[in-house]
Amino acid sequence: QPVLAVVGRPNVGKSTLVNRILGRREAVVQDVPGVTRDRVAYDAYWGGRRFTLVDTGGWEPDATGLQASVAAQAEIAMQTADAVLLVLDATVGATTTEEAVARVLRRSKKPVLLAANKVDDDRLLADTASLWRLGLGEPHPVSALHGRSSGDLLDAIIAALPTAPRELGSVSAGPRRVALVGKPNVGKSSLLNKLSGEERSVVDSVAGTTVDPVDSLVELDGDTWRFVDTAGLRKRVNSANGAEYYASLRTKTAIDAAEVAIVMLDAAEPLSEQDLRVLTMVVEAGRSLVLAFNKWDLVDEDRRHAMVRELDRGLVRVPWAEKVNISALTGRSVRKLAPALRTALKSWDQRVPTGQLNGWLSDLIAATPPPVRSGKQPKVLFATQAGIRPPTLVLFTTGFLEAGYRRFIERKFRERFGFEGSPVRVNVRVRE
Ligand code: GDP
Image 1 (cartoon, rainbow, N blue to C red):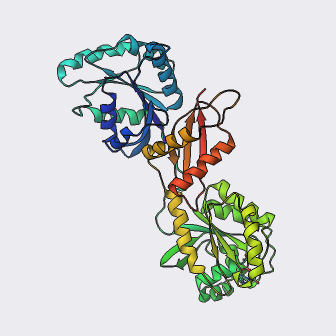
Image 2 (image 1 turned 30 degrees about the horizontal axis):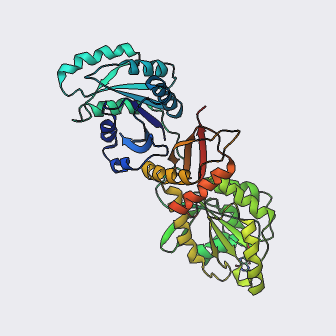
């Protein structure tokens, strides 16, 4: 989702305006320090659009002096955000500070909006026109306190923000889409057969002349699920020896069409390269995942012991995936697939509010800062969950974060917020 940075001197009413924009939704979080003390991020909504609002700190003069610290803040705002909102006090007008900021912002290719706050009555309206001279376009007179014209300002903000790219798995009505994938002979057809009911396969075996539908609707644990791209599976019911030369392509197509994948593994055999390739496809496609260990009826005590160690090593990439032990042959535990699918999809759809995310992240980073790289300590400025399906975090930083540290953040994020059954992406946006 797009990011709006709000900048302004202390006492111009920036916080009041921010609360106004947020509809006081997350105002409570104001007391929670941001990732760095002077920057806090929130979720904002307007006109059906969602964006992240980053409240940059008040510009107190630091060692380098007010002008320099203000310019630095504006630089950060400009580089991390998709648009910048400069707030000033209309009763004071543009000071040298705002003139300095305007100089920085004018160089930006990002949209800049100018809000003249504290226009509590019409007499000040005429004065705001003089703010055109800052070269930031039309000044928007507002009264954060009374709410005057804040709707117009929000309209202008929304118009300035880039539209977010469509999320991967768009919401669709009807049954949720499941891909049933795994290497040949692992038992996919058998399971689908079991789930679809026996009549189905009888119909299929005489249906040589009819065109098979691509998907199968399957009733499982009180819900209907759409198993996608199952034509090949259903055809194979009576010809288990058929060569699956198109298996890999079919797997890819099915995963892409689905929201959640059941990767079926043969519990009686060690994990194979082929199994791992299928798992990788699911993770890279960003789909949620359930692991089904089939042929559990063949698993004895010895095999069970061997599995424990084998899986720890084999499934390092997907420690978050739920494992269900089933037998497609006997029908044992196949109903347990449904709760696992629901959990995975819920995680895939889950969004952590930005305020909550940053409250958690600031503690984590204070306790375990990113490792120093080439003599520099990268700072994490703030984070936002930019998307769902799959859940995607974006960390805004002052430097590159090593893969190990990103994995650490992902692990801690999962410990705190769950997300069982779904991949989580951690992206980093570095401002240089
Ligand atoms: P697919 O290639 O993944 O569709 O696998 P199939 O469903 O055609 O199954 C391959 C073979 O494994 C068939 O002979 C099945 O009868 C057998 N099979 C499938 N599931 C099970 C199971 O849970 N237990 C046992 N013992 N055999 C199974």
